[in-house]
Image (cartoon, rainbow, N blue to C red; front, side, top):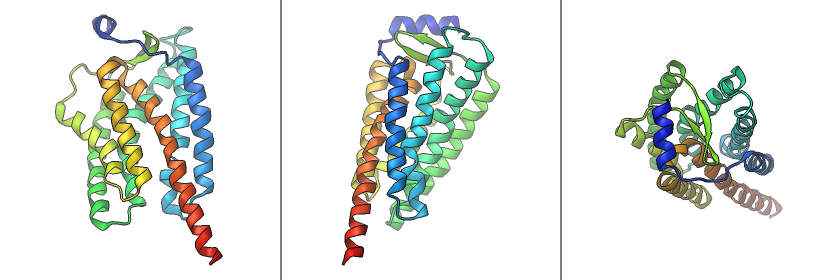
Length: 232
């Protein structure tokens, strides 16, 4: 809404996430994702190894939106790209992130907690999906980043559940690299909320995409250990 834009303009801070940044992030994370997939040992590792590639696709979508908004901000292409990005950010990740972590978790108790977080992610994802489908979808460029139209007052419980679903599962993982990913994603969320809250979905997803690169170390190390074991 016009009022929302005025508030964002008055309070927002600028961050230069221009189209090249989105496309560069998409290219780098895409290469990392393919590299991760080549080092998986079994099917249960594929969802986690695919995360950089999925982030790459999301960043490419936002890069295309960057190009579309100055030309036809209210056109069908911009509307479709906005819809897909928001489904990625608000519906897909709170379900997929804890599930991917749970599939590779060897500890039964930790895996149980992660699966409970998957259920929470489904709940919050369905809420956001209903909002995205029923409400007006709009995005605009402001202060060097993209702002997505959303409800001004998100229930605190849902916001907390979203953060738990996306960050808590990696943080309690038995695997060090996955815990590092969770810590980086949570730190990115804190920085984004403090300085770029008006463009939270856009900026945080950019940070998370870059952070997902740490997964390569996880899969490369596991592949090295598996090779060493086979050689003996």
